[in-house]
Length: 442
Image (cartoon, rainbow, N blue to C red; front, side, top):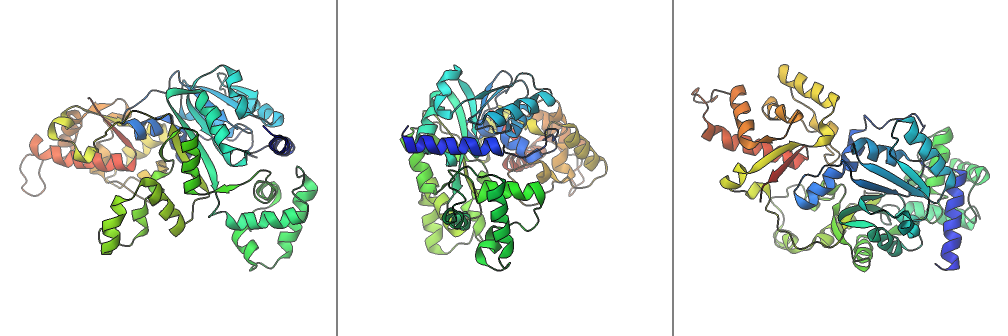
């Protein structure tokens, strides 16, 4: 590492020693943050890549750049039985991370003051690596990705992210202003923070840089934290989708998908996805995933992070979409409720909606669903037995027949052949939402 890179890392270390991040109270719990728990449950990413269910019990998880340990706490909550190891270059942050996990009773977690570049010193190999809000600060993201790859098990997965230069362009313009003022020369302290606040508050509200980057609702410590993590953040850089793919290629890592993959669906940007202009209808299906993501970003730059999963290059695995499974394929299917939904509140709300014959707001529990989505009692009934154990397709069909024994049109008894395609359609919808996982024996 050259002197310039070393100096930058030292500035970053000093900044987070002076102002550890995230500034979340020690006693705060993520137990009701369903979306974060869903994303950080490693079952989500492994199913997305392999169409298979894994058990977090006994798995090794690295939180690279763990800060004050709140993401380490989420990882521990979301993956019971896994060991979480956190590293960070800020001694003060590591101290707070240890206190946080101890406070919440996770005595299997461990923390080390360590750079990502020195991961080999731990002597561990990891099933999953979470590198959240860190990679874009480092002098060389490729070297950091290679370092994480070196301690990743052959079938492991890395979650990492880069700041999006397109979405964050106005923030970078603001950073240039404060660099010109000398406020970013060294690790910022209270004086630099106050000077930024004074200047931004002195601007008219309709001045572009204030209108597009300033949060008018923040006060006190929350405001100071926003200033530090945006306007004065040492090492902060933005990147594009092509740069992200270039970094992965140079690190010899394979792109799996975006963490919020449903929110990066290019087709959702069109009024009528099934009725596109002819040239779009012919060309869009033919372009690569990288090109689709790049077009999405150019058309609709709403994501602050280029947040992705990657791993070692895998042998080509051809997965048949559940929507294309044959009748015989379905006979070998085991249906799982996503483990993050096996929580008391989900069960209570689900059963109440069934008993009261009302819709169930399932989007509340799933990070991939941005809009408000409910399911009716017919769908909800298919989830009851899954609260306790995985089920075969036919066992769910039998449960559904008990709930709907009569065909509502003919008023004749509902037989298995009639019920089967109806239940399959429900399961496909729930799998698409992300609440069900369908594993086919091969």
